[in-house]
Image (tube, rainbow, N blue to C red; front, side, top):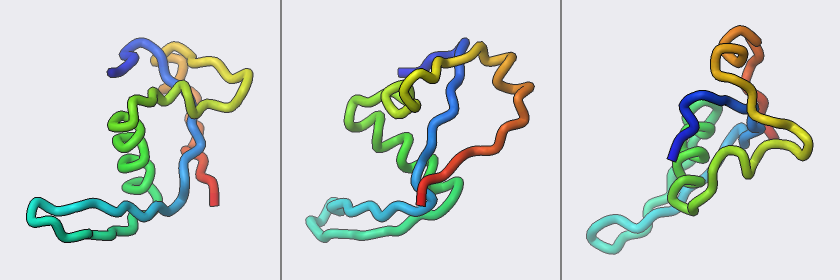
Length: 79
């Protein structure tokens, strides 16, 4: 599920390690960093039924997409 008309800044981990089971039952562990870690974390949230708004800081509201594009703000990461 996506919100096409609004955006929000969400702090994400700088590095994540994901453990998954392959089709043949083997456990595969992969570590992702920076932008790819951010993307994978976002997608895992979808699998868990979470929207990005659940990860926004308390009191922070989504802003219109056009306004977000003009902020020039960099992504924030948690270490």
